[in-house]
Length: 75
Image 1 (tube, rainbow, N blue to C red):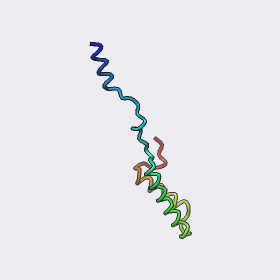
Image 2 (cartoon, one colour):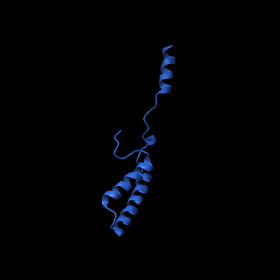
Image 3 (cartoon, rainbow, N blue to C red):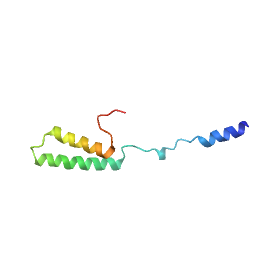
Image 4 (cartoon, rainbow, N blue to C red):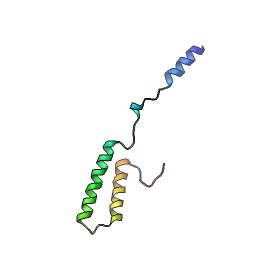
């Protein structure tokens, strides 16, 4: 009886596999966000009427769209 219970417990347990580790902010997301930030920065350089605060709000909005989480919310 005890052996069967141990086998069931062993089947349910999973070993740590570093290859399966998923990062929320992967390299693909970093590259895409950097490209978007660069485009917004270039627009800001050539259109001086846009204040820096508005550019930061646009970046925050894009992060909200991309990840579905508002950047100021703490989890």
